[in-house]
Length: 154
Image 1 (cartoon, rainbow, N blue to C red):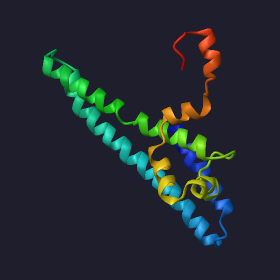
Image 2 (spheres, rainbow, N blue to C red; image 1 turned 90 degrees about the vertical axis):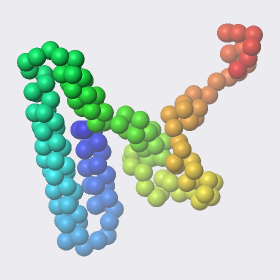
Image 3 (cartoon, one colour; image 1 turned 90 degrees about the horizontal axis):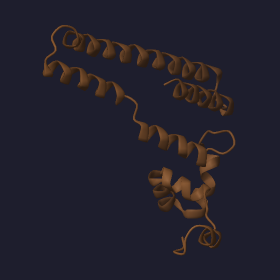
């Protein structure tokens, strides 16, 4: 996905700026970054085209139920390529722990680590979800809500 590539590229550039490695290591790291992304695109397109060609014989011609099932399975697999839950969780974690620059590094993780300790911080990082984000960003005033909406309270 384009936004992931852009985020990875910005993170790579940011890491290069912060490193004090020799120039050859930075060049090698950049070459690996570019070659790996090109390889990912080639392998991904090849896999897609193989599956597309396999499905094409079912999409053209007869109208059997099994043909529709094959096409549906292909579409289901095609739509399942992007794991939305993983993608949104990464974006939320970057938003919360990334700081102003939007990149999660040791400096941004240090306050959580120092405040809660290693074991609890690890649990926070691994289990943080969109519901936790909503609780952090949207706090309700129960008294105000009671007066306006219902007699039951928050």
